[in-house]
Amino acid sequence: MVVVIVGVAAWGVWELSLKPASIEKASIQNMAFPLPDKPSIAVMPFVNLSEDKSQEFFSDGLTDDLITDLSKLSGLFVIARNSTFSYKGKPVRIQQVAEEIEVRYVLEGSVRCEGDQMRINAQLMDSATGRHLWAERYDGSMRDIFSLQDKINQQIVAALAVKLTAGEKALVSRKGTNDPAAYEEVMKGREHHRKFTEQDFLKAEACFKRALELDPNYSEAKAALAYTHFFAARFRMEPAFKLCQVVQ
Image (tube, rainbow, N blue to C red; front, side, top):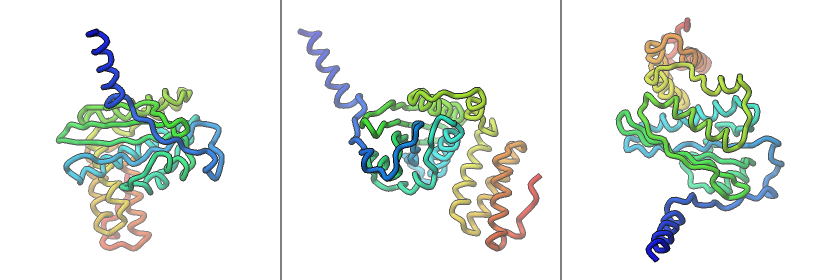
C-alpha cells in the first residue's frame, strides 16, 4: 500500500509540475506554402528575466548567435532574425508562430543574469504534434557562455536528427574569440547599432573598440566597427564623420 501511494504521488508530481506541457498543434493546411523538405526551425527572442533590464542586450545577443550558428548547417532551414524578432515582447502562441512564419519547430527560452552568474532555459517544440522535444536548464558563469551555446546547438541537432559534416561541426563551434568580455562588448555594440541614432552609433563604436582592445584578432568586432562607420557616413551622422577610422 505504501509503495502504491508513493507511486501515485510521484506520478502526480510528474504530471503537474515536471512533465513538459503539450502545446496546441499547428495546422499545416493553414500555411500558405508547404514546409521545406528539411527540418525548419524558428529561434524566438530569448526573454530577459534579469532584474537589471539593461541586460536585454545579452538575451538578444544569445538569440542572434543561435540563429547564426544554426544557419550554418545545410540540414536545417532557419527562419531569419527579422521574422522572429517581430514577435519580441508580444504574447504569442507557438501554434500561431508556426502557422504565420511557416515553420515546424520552435525554440524559445529565457536568460537570467545575476552578477557573473547566468541561467539559461531553453525548450524545443514540435508544432505539428504539439509536444516538447526537449527542455533544459543551463547554469554557469559568463566564462561558460561559449560552451553553453554549444550545448544548446548540439541538443537541437540531436533532437532533429541532423547530420553534420566535419566542416559544419567546426563552423558551429567557431566563436571568433575566446574572451567572454570581448564577446560581451560586441553584443552591447550590436544592441546600440540597431537603434540607429547618432548617439547609439557612438556607443556602438566605443563597444567595438573595447572588444578589439581585449582581443585585437576578433574579426567580428573589426567587421562590426567598419559596418558602424559605413552607416554613420552613409546617413551623414555628425559627429560620426570625425570618428571614422580605418580598421586595420
